[in-house]
Image 1 (cartoon, one colour):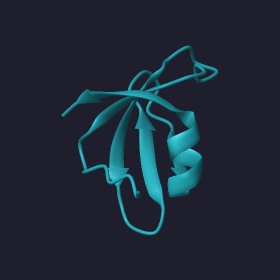
Image 2: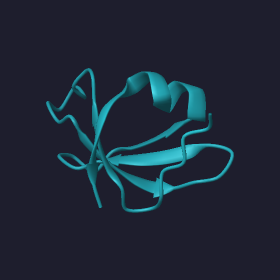
Image 3: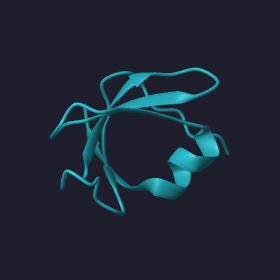
Image 4: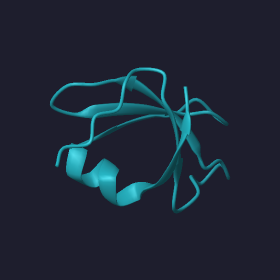
Length: 61
């Protein structure tokens, strides 16, 4: 089963980012996902499998 997140979806990660934030917003979808930290604004690109491992729960849009 493939996970599909839409642009603008807010997700919570299991481990915090070095800035201390755990909430991220999906900015780009496709073969990879680009997520943006809601605390510091850092952008990270992840494969769908890596994103699935890191996500704790989906907050919403």
